Length: 154
Image (cartoon, rainbow, N blue to C red; front, side):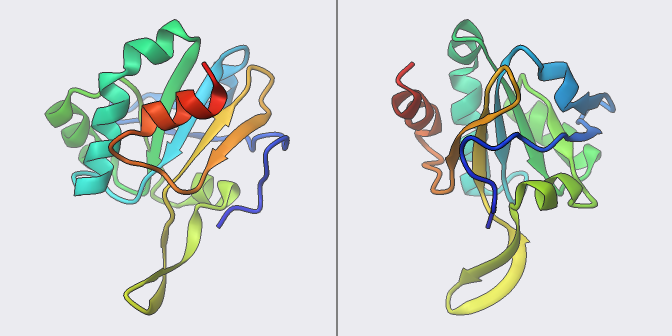
């Protein structure tokens, strides 16, 4: 899991979203960012998390946050996922796992007694100055917005 910690400068990122648009961290300077990493489009936990963020998207915007999702799925997969669930935020296709590696979300996982390489679900709250304010390693997929707002007291 991530070696990054709260107070660290967030690594720069760049990738292509579900609509073929280039998305990078420079676009979010001066804004608060919810950068969330998830294992796979259209799986139960990932769908719950994305829909929870979608359902509360206007609250994020009103509180000065932008939301960006990242997984190793392709642009095509992201497009279907975003259209099916009416997601209003970019989903970066990190097929080479560069962003996930930089943020420490790709690595060893344990499930049912087995160890394997995979994507660890995590969310990073990044300040207007590009500093990591909060890291969520244990994400409540059904109540993630509430988890974020309660923790940040916003």
